[in-house]
Amino acid sequence: MIKKKLLMLGNIMVMSLAVVIVFWSPSGVASENSILITNVKIFNGKSGDLIENHGVLIENNQIVKLVPDSEEADYKVVIDGKNGYLTPGLIDVHSHAVMGADQGDFFNGDPNYIQLFAAKEMDEMLMRGVTTIRDAGGNAFALKKAIDNGVVKGPRIYPSGAVISQYSGHADFRPSNPSRLPKEWGGPLAPGEAEGHVLIANGKDQVIAAVRQQLFLGATQIKLAVGGGVSSFTDPLYVNEYSDEEIKAAVEAAADYGTYIQVHVFNDIGTQRAIEAGAKTIEHGHLLSEETLKLMAKKDVFLSTQVQVLAQLKPLYTDPIRKWKLEQALKGMDNMFKMAKKHNVKVAFGTDLLFSYEGRKKQLHDLTLRKEWYDSSEIMIQATGNGGEVVGLTGLRNPYGKLGVIEEGAMADLLIYKVNPLEDVSIVEDYENNLQLIIKDGQIYKNTL
Ligand SMILES: [Zn+2]
Image (cartoon, rainbow, N blue to C red; front, side, top):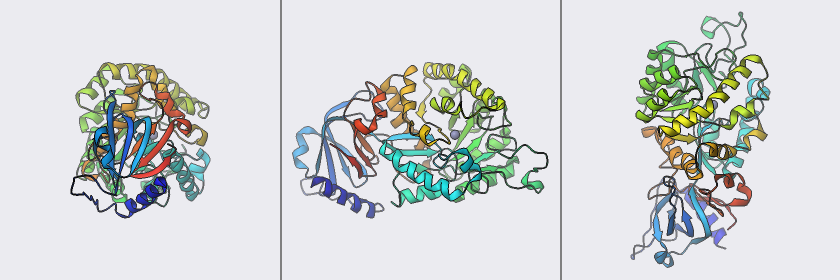
């Protein structure tokens, strides 16, 4: 009965998203439109110390406050958390929502198919407890709109739009063929350019135009490739892509729209250039030296890195160039994490999993793998509070509210696990058994309490 009522409330919430209506009774107690979640231990997304003897009051799609147990009798709609562990919804800051179908379909297939495939994956991702993703490249604009409008279920999406890259850069997927001229010289668009997944731009003016085009389409931040990458065929990881002038131009064009750039890069020089130009998050970074990681800590730049993707891509990348690059990145990973930890570089949880439905189902395994360098509560902070800070960098362009934390005024994205993820984060992987409640944007998507 209560569940039915809550689902009904959920529908009302959707209708009233634009207007946050808060009804207060004369005694100061929240009214019908609110839900109090009691009998939980609260992980607030920022500290490894659990908050006890409090419930969480949500109203519409926001967290109103933490309520001491002694006051819980004042509230009508109550969810009993059964002594579970309440956490913020998980945030994956390096996802490629539309890159789940296999490579052949992605590069040569019907673009409608990959969008339909992505819709199915987004539904499943939400049911894993991932309530927000930052899309690190790909045409996810329609998907974001469909999720926001309730057409399909899925996490909130912060889209970057096309990965902006130079010729012979990380997102240049033209076949290496001398007759395949650049588009400015009469050649065709690169695979993925027409569908909006990548965009090749050279020189300051083109880079500015490319950034503005993504903003026009609704990008909440910009993805720029400033160094070689594993998936591309022509650029070794040591390659630096884009000049200082080009990177700066991208940063400024994004900043004028209230937002920032995230950069794809593995090496030191590209990372240092991007940081000096004003980039806010470094994607990957597996070859970074201690010196560069120290610079990141000093400048408060986030390391948005991933553990599992390299091992997953290994069997797919059998050609000598990508195989070599992948091995290099794998070798650098341990040093990167050790130095990042030593210098307190802020790390967020991201996965970057590509082109394999089965592989992408293991999204949360990336959390477990981080136990080699971090304890479980540090990893949970990466996946919630730190992720919330990353998506919050979007600033004036942020379409949502505060995320990744359980505190007054944050968005009502929350989960309840029956066992403590701060003791062993790997329990999060078994979401079917351990995750009992999923609330995103004030709506209940799962409740087995
Ligand atoms: Zn990526």
